[in-house]
Length: 134
Length: 175
Image (cartoon, rainbow over all chains, first blue to last red):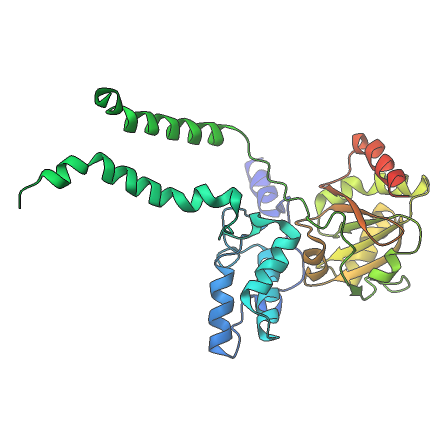
């Protein structure tokens, strides 16, 4: 019985299987032009994987992330700017897909928070900072 | 006044921890809906996924009548579960086209043999590029495209029996 169970365990296929096709060519292959590859890599680190949602497409092993990397490299190689590729994806998946939030009214608090916190900290410490004798 | 202000940092901390705890305890919605609803189908021209059945291009999706576009794959287990419901929608008179993501012709043919074939056209999308162009984030997904080629509705995940009435309503609304 135990042997059978072990056998069944090793025969079991994962429920959410991947496809049978190999990864796209440009999913894991660098572009020949180092400057384009650097642009593509920088962008891939700021794009979010649609499958494993905490990871960037640069870090993810998901097949869809591989296809997204291939798409990024192909578009950059064809002469598109990284920001064009990013906005193409944002047009399809929303700001969610980019790890770099756009500067717009709804994100102003986000961008202002570090400055506000720094000022608040300075204000809290104002007496000690001013009153100190060097 | 100053005495009360001393507790301000503590208050800020409590509010911050409270906000984080609240967001962490509520289950996140992991579905990433397409922003292409209301937009024309992006330009796609997909080769046939199986011999004997035409491929799929954007012009096929603007023929005066709304159509369903099912994004599926033979290696996708939930796609098996929704197959009978797609056949049912076909019987109710909805034309259905499909995009086979990262699939091989023989695998798609075997899938259709086994689980039914309600599709008029099936385009092959070997590198998920059409899927990305549609703003689809997984398989299976089903889009409703109206007669002018505008994407009207996206259903994410497998179609379940309870989803049929809303799909019928959305299809009627797209007429």
